[in-house]
Amino acid sequence: MDNQEIAGILEEYAELLELNGEDVFRVNAYRRAAKSLRNLNTDVVELWRSKRLKEVPGVGRAIAEKIDEIISTGRLRALEELRARIPSEVVELTGVPFVGPKTAKLLYTKFGVSSRAQLIEKLRDGSLVKQGFSPKLAEKILGAVEGVGEAFTKMLLIEGMNEASQLIDKIRGAEFELYVCGSIRRGKEAVGDVDVVVLSKTRDKTLLDLASKLRGGKTLAEGESKLTWVSLRGVQFDFRLAHPEYLGAMQLYFTGSKEHNIALRTHAQRLGFKLSEFGLFEQNGVRVAGASEEEVYSKLGLQYIEPELRENTGEIEAASKGVLPKLADASDVFGDYHVHSTWSDGVDTLERMVEGALRQGYKYVVFTDHSKSERVANGMSEERLRKQAEEIERLRSKYGSIEILHGSEVDILSGGRLDYDDRTLAQLDYVVASLHRRFTSDTEALTEAVIKALENRYVDTVGHPTNRMLGRRPENGVDLEKVLAAAKKNSKFLEVDGQPRRMDLPSIWVKRAVEEGVRLVLSSDAHSTAELGYMMFALINARRGWAAAQNIANSSHKFRSART
Ligand code: DGT
Ligand code: CA
Ligand code: CA
Ligand code: ZN
View (cartoon, rainbow, N blue to C red):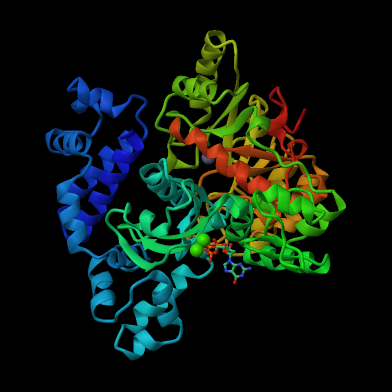
């Protein structure tokens, strides 16, 4: 049991308490405790052993007892009782805008709606309204979810990854080796389910044996080589059995995308082969490849194609010509360019964040706390910015092995004005200009504001350029083709923000930036030491946009702003 896992259990408990009509103070107490566990730098189990649980901020007697039960028994009985009472379908529906616990229950019991996707379908075709659902509410819901993307009906990538690794940790063993495939392996920002290829190490074991190991949840379809199972939280898992001689072919098939598979099979046919999940075969039925993906691509005369590229957007042609880029990977990232601290809305101090950056193995870290107009995020006045500079100076003398840079995430205000004047900006090492609020609904004016910000000599990049919140808020409508051109003309970076709900720039725009030779800058946008790991999602998005090490500013061993 680690901090994140225990926090996850408390969060689920809070959610179900809320659905059960529990007092908001009690619900929020669990949420607060979970949040502080997520951001804690010490191991909860250690604290528990030495009976110091109550030292965790937000953990009082009642919550300490719950944590004690979780650690000592591995479960929380009160949570299990709630789960039995509240169907996972209702939980899913309550995340929808304007749908509270009551409406969710009604939708499920009276209208027979069991998923978000179904809700949208039945709202669009008018069938819910025909059954008596409020037309006003229907319109409001549809309006709110317009353009928020697939994450609304699917999961965020990080949620899929967490579900996958929790399950796999439980069932991996002597008999099975498990490989996560599907859209999770391709790194899509929103994923529908968890696809897993299962290698039977002992050969005689099948997915029926695996099914018997799965606790809770329910099995939807079961066979020796295919299994579909839904976890208690309503996440679907698809399993496919493989044996060593066709493990690679099965991974290839189950990783997809469907479009990549179809194009690859056509390519194989043209060469006189037949490709399936069981291998690459000659016309006479002899298998010529299948044990590994590398082997299959190689027999097809192709370079190895990384999962992130498998979207049928030109990767097969590039691989046949041998011109695929060598994608950037974690070893190419030497620093983080966008990090918050307690000086604005972060939860960890500058010093803790520096230590976190050292643990990431970075050579530099850039602090970019919010500027003064971001009042809700505790944005900084010029005076506080100067004080922060002094604190950073002190840290520089204490930590010699990492470059500590003083930057700012400066709001772009109406007309493209910036939240600090040029004299203040000139004092900083690095400036991310971000559009947090849409001060106008005129997207042309917004685009112009972003371009004007990029033209400022002290600005290095525009932060999270579309300002999307996956599944919650659509892109801001800024014309990225024009922004790209402005970045190119002014030799500025474009940011790829790694917050899992952002992953912004979107990967199709990363690809355009790479084509145009506009440099990217990857960032975690971390608000705690734990979130420094979000760099991973920036990297995945950059890879999905075909970015190589030379396309990202982070591959420099020393900090370099767009100005240098
Ligand atoms: P998702 O789950 O909606 O986020 O997206 P995927 O790509 O994970 O799709 P999923 O789970 O339906 O199927 C997993 C993989 O199985 C998919 O990426 C490719 C393969 N696959 C599924 N259906 C087909 C098909 O009709 N033809 C071929 N060639 N492959 C398929
Ligand atoms: Ca999938
Ligand atoms: Ca699937
Ligand atoms: Zn930020």
